[in-house]
Length: 247
Ligand SMILES: NC(=O)c1ccc[n+]([C@@H]2O[C@H](COP(=O)([O-])OP(=O)(O)OC[C@H]3O[C@@H](n4cnc5c(N)ncnc54)[C@H](OP(=O)(O)O)[C@@H]3O)[C@@H](O)[C@H]2O)c1
Image (cartoon, rainbow, N blue to C red; front, side):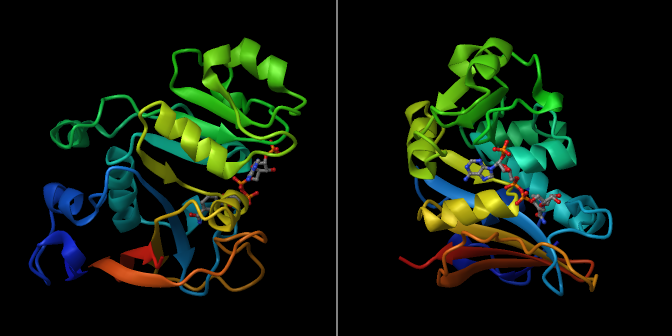
């Protein structure tokens, strides 16, 4: 993987990056840090013909996707994406576990599904070991069921009628989960941006045009933000970048 823009990583520009190099290139610059990771086609689609992101990503994106997970304490995903993409409880890719430990991160990688309704996605049902959590508002119709299913300690109540993303991030930090990664989808990403809760956007720009009508990576709630390019990596005509939110 070729490093095109090295930012403050200290890595030489135009060097080839292995997994350890990617860990350095994508390291969080401060103790508490929240970022997203999304993939888009060159013409701005967040999904391909099958309505999922799996048809617009590729191996280069997958490598960075796994590194970003391995650099995180927790992954936060909208319940819609958990359902559409069939997210199971997560684990860090085996080859990345030693690097993760070197960065002081635990072996477990909890997944938080964000839902206003509070209905536990089928792929997470019955997971009571703390790898699957829900973030719901107090008024969620499925709150009691979610508590029964996942264990009360695995249901975060953040907000009254709707999930309050700021309260959610505070709750995650309260558990010692300082490096927060959200993998979307577009609705949740819009909420994170509207709440001013993202420090960084990681985007993969995949080398295809899909045409037609598809969701964009940021949904309707998204607030305009100005960004600074921090890191840019290329492989197989695919661009993977880090953009920091300008404060
Ligand atoms: N290109 C990419 O990188 C990428 C990444 C992720 C997803 N996707 C694609 O995006 C599509 C899904 O889009 P989407 O916008 O519907 O995804 P989403 O944000 O994951 O799902 C929307 C659902 O998630 C819950 N939710 C989202 N934001 C919330 C908030 N702020 N507060 C409370 N609940 C919230 C709600 O669930 P309840 O209905 O349970 O209340 C809502 O109905 C899929 O096709 C997926 O494949 C693409």
